Length: 233
Ligand SMILES: CC(C)(COP(=O)(O)OP(=O)(O)OC[C@H]1O[C@@H](n2cnc3c(N)ncnc32)[C@H](O)[C@@H]1OP(=O)(O)O)[C@@H](O)C(=O)NCCC(=O)NCCS
Image (cartoon, rainbow, N blue to C red; front, side, top):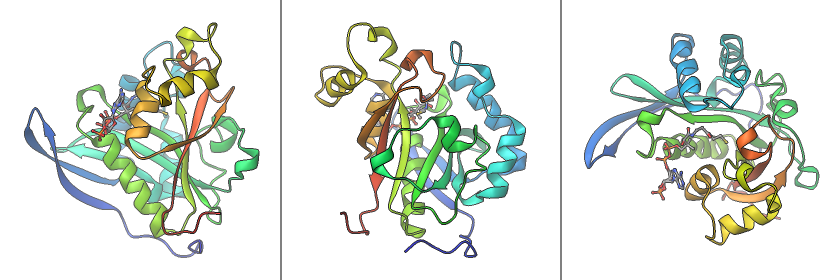
């Protein structure tokens, strides 16, 4: 079912409107290019302030590797010519029975040297929307573009580790699994898990030591979106 390595998708380009205070604004979702690098790094700086380690922001070399190894998976969102968000993906082979992994090992520390065109899973390396562009639906539209990629490439699923930034504050009171249960039952709110649920993602497993991420006590919730055109086993 998976598209052979030799078949490349054309460049992605989607124009649509989003609403800010009930006023429509034109959004473009497209692949990012070398000329976007500075803006992409600026978005990371705004999205991941301390205590998030600045070494985990994109660097130029990583972004060049995304464009070289899997240009179709390197997406960004632009409003009125200004870059406001990005979504980076790669292809991986994923076995749900061996779900535990760290972000660094899965993504080759963000350089995506582990990208496997013959894999079955579109893996989200990062999604970021600058604070000024939040709440307009940009994150959701970029994920929608990634779901379209999953279908176009005949992959089984999209998968990613969602940060759980509300967990760090209660880590000594409850387990991460209990925290996730609370979020799923509406007893607690988490900005990233909440966002991913709104975007159609479903939880698979909590993974410890996923990322150096104090707010999440280094945990992540693996969340998938299954290709609805591939029979589920
Ligand atoms: C998480 C993030 C990408 C969301 O981007 P965004 O563009 O503001 O989100 P959207 O406007 O597309 O929201 C899509 C849906 O998620 C919901 N949502 C957004 N933020 C939410 C939050 N904090 N809590 C609960 N739901 C949320 C929206 O209500 C919307 O739901 P709807 O479509 O049913 O109305 C953005 O806040 C961000 O970049 N955060 C910092 C970086 C980060 O932590 N990235 C995640 C790494 S795993």
